[in-house]
Image 1 (cartoon, rainbow, N blue to C red):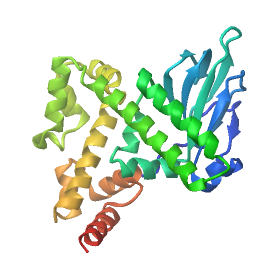
Image 2 (cartoon, rainbow, N blue to C red; image 1 turned 180 degrees about the vertical axis):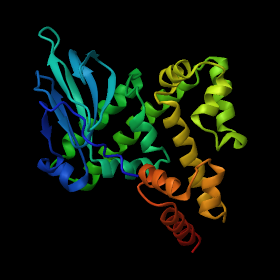
Image 3 (cartoon, helix red, strand yellow; image 1 turned 120 degrees about the vertical axis):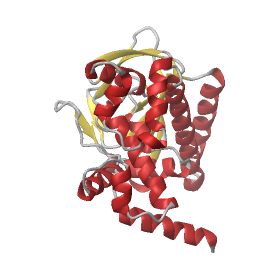
Amino acid sequence: MNINSDNKADNSAILVDYRNNKSLNKYGVACHWWNSETTSLHCHNFYEFFIVTSGEATHEINGETRKLHKGMLQLIKPEDSHRIVSSKSKKCTHINISVTPKKLETICAAIDISPHELVENSETATNLSVNELEYFTKIAERISLLYFNSDEKFRALICEMIVEAICILYKNMISSVLDFPDRFADILDKIHSPEYCGCSADDVYRLAGFSPPVVIEQFKKYTGKTVVEYLKSIKMNKACELLIDTDKPIVEISNILGYASLSHFNRVFKDYMGITPAAYRKSKRKEKTLLCL
């Protein structure tokens, strides 16, 4: 799946290109400490995790303003326009961890976390515990010592931090999901069940018993997605499962998931996964065969 979103950043933002960074261009990852002087409005064609290790600052992102403080972890996406405005009284420092879209996909696949869910999550910031902040600080210190000495260890440590950051954000996302009101949780239980795997947005509105605008508002509030986006993620995950674990014809899988035509299903699947259903099934079965050798 291609998670390198079309750039939606402010046209006035300066583009920071990963190809101009030696480590990002060569390895797909980079890390450095940053003393947060006020920056110009900018965007990237890569992902950036930053962790505030001391002080305070103001973060302006996509037209909104948020206070930065010690212990904050935030994910910046390629489509985000942002800048940091430093505090005169409490100078802010943070660890800056960068990763290209391709490398992020590889890392997410290795830990079995959906990059699509991570990137589309509306809440991409969280507060670290004392132990979590200490972990990142110690790893960053080791990276600083290894920068000119060992490329292999340098890359491995950065990837380790990226894995930890992804897991923390993902856990935070799941925790917010668990806070659903009972009635909303019942709706989710139903649309995740096998008998509803082919349902449409209109079916969800009828199940909920509320008007579409109310249901849409609840989905955005509790999942960060529209009803259509949420259903698509369920259907595509189910499609992957059926393609790998069954011999059902692709047209049958399309019908099970409620798609009116095979061409529509193929188009949605390729847009979501970056590969056709047939190619996905073939590649996954090849992987299975190799694992059994």
